Length: 296
Image 1 (spheres, one colour):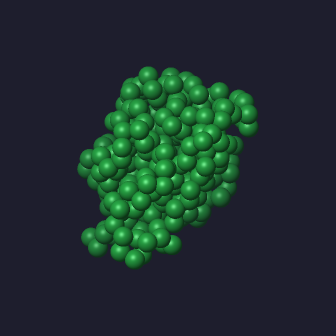
Image 2 (cartoon, rainbow, N blue to C red; image 1 turned 90 degrees about the horizontal axis):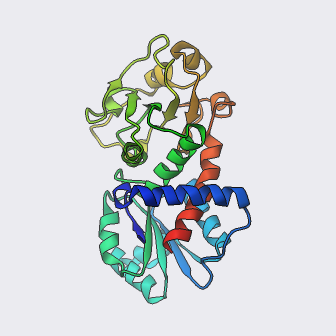
Image 3 (tube, rainbow, N blue to C red; image 1 turned 180 degrees about the horizontal axis):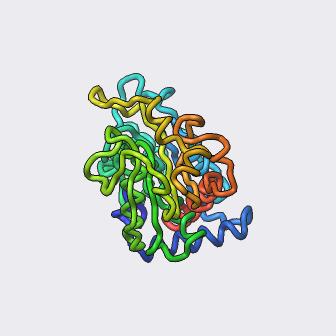
């Protein structure tokens, strides 16, 4: 197991192993085994990233890897070099593994086929298709609060259609028998394949839910046929103190980031005692360190 394009590439026993090592790394940080000594990892991010890129970079350096930070904007891609030739060039420079984010859906499957058997690879997000490490750190964070996920009640709010996190997260939650998942937001942001969904809120509609997982509106992924009245969205779905009172929600708040403060969530809620947002970020560092330790 040295190439991870999607959650479907992983067996439960391997995920359990990652989670166990994540807990161990958390407990001992910053003391960590230098499994990356003598190895080189290349980070290739075609799209902006703060949490994913920097946590992978920090984890890799703490593990002893040499880290190459590849910038497409300042590479020969701007001179017409192909994606495939770029990868081959880096392999010729003796790169041992890659962490890649790319806007093309399912390019991760092509990358797996392109790389030699002994080269490790982690998909850091490709189009709307998958973001396996975000799903893993989110579910790990849930397990910290609820050891048994089987009876967990999760509501996902916001722009589900354009999220690459949610398909990966749903797939991973199913592995842990967590099936009580519903969706909340405008019909234009939640397609029929995400069910059950609700396009309005009502009094105490979230009173029995354990986790409210909030997503930002990803305008950069909107197509010409996509539309949204942002004022209506904020009035009905912005997670603020009035929203929490109206819906009766008293569980944990999660958000994969980046947050658009005063759009889908307010600063007050994001920094409340029930918010796990920064814990997700911290766990992302430990989990990505664990993952690199196991596959590199």
